[in-house]
Length: 384
Image (cartoon, rainbow, N blue to C red; front, top):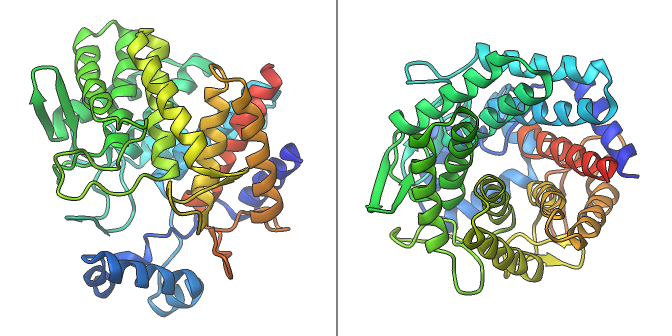
C-alpha cells in the first residue's frame, strides 16, 4: 500500500508539474495581513480560507507558483528513490530540481539561499524572496545528498555556499559564550528552535566534510542553545524562552528538532545529544499521536494536517535507527494517511477537521513533504 501510494503521488506530480498553490500565498494579500496580527483573527481567517480555498484564490487572482522548498524536497525524494531503485528517471528528476534551485536563488546575499515566492506576515513583515534559513538548509542538505550519491563536486560547493549565507547574512544572537541562535531570515531576530537547528545541522555536516572548525564551532553553539531550552518533559516550545510568546508545542516542528539533533549526533557522537533525542522522542511519541494519527499540538488533535503526517513518517523512519519500534509507527502513520488523506488522483488533502476536510492539493505543504516522507520510509525498509 505504501509503495502504491508513493507511485500514485509521483504520477500526480508528473502530470501536474511543480507549480502549485501554498497555504500562505493567499495570506500575502495586503488586506489579509491586517488580520494576522492577532491570533484570534488569524485563526478565523485561516478557517475561512480552508473552507473556500479555491474561491478566494480565484477572487484575488492568486497564481500557482514554484516554491524553492518544494523543489528541494522533491530533489531529496528523487535521490532517495534513485538510491533504492537505480532508475535513471529518478536521477533525471532530481537533477532537474537541483538545477532549478541553482538558477533561482535569492539575489544579493553572501551565498546560495532561497525563500518563499510570496510576502508573508510573521511578527514582522517578510517580503517575497527573502531567504529563509529553513528553506536554504533543506536545499543545502539536498545538494549534499546529491554530492554523495551522484559524486559531483559542484553540489558540495553550492552547499558550502549556503553556509556562508547562514554565517554572514543571518542575525546571530550571542546568548552567552557557549550559546548562539540564528535568526529565521535576515530581516528578523527571532529565536526559533527548529530554524536554529537547521542551520546547525548543515554547518556541522559541511564542517565535517571540509574539516572547517569555524563551521563546527558555530554549529555547536547553536545546538547548545536549543538543548539548553528543552523542557523538563522533553518538549520544546516553538520560540525560545527569551521571546514574549513561546508558541505551541506541535508535531512537525518537534520532528524537525529531533531529526536535526539526531543528524548532528551522528557526526559528533556526543552522549548529551543522544539523551536529549531520547527524551524528546519519548515526549513526541507519548503526546503528539492519538494511536497512529499525528496530532496538531500536544494537547489538540484536530485539524489533522498533512504536513504533520509527513513529518511523523519522516521523523519516525529516521529515528528507527535508535528506536526500532518507530519503524512500525511510521508505517502505521503512512497507511492511515494514505487511506484517509490521499485522493484517488494521487495527491494528498491539506487538512482533516472533525466535520470537514480541506482537499486542496498544496504543493509544498502536502505533496512535496509526503513524497519525501514516503520515499524515506521505502528507502529504509528496502535497506533493512
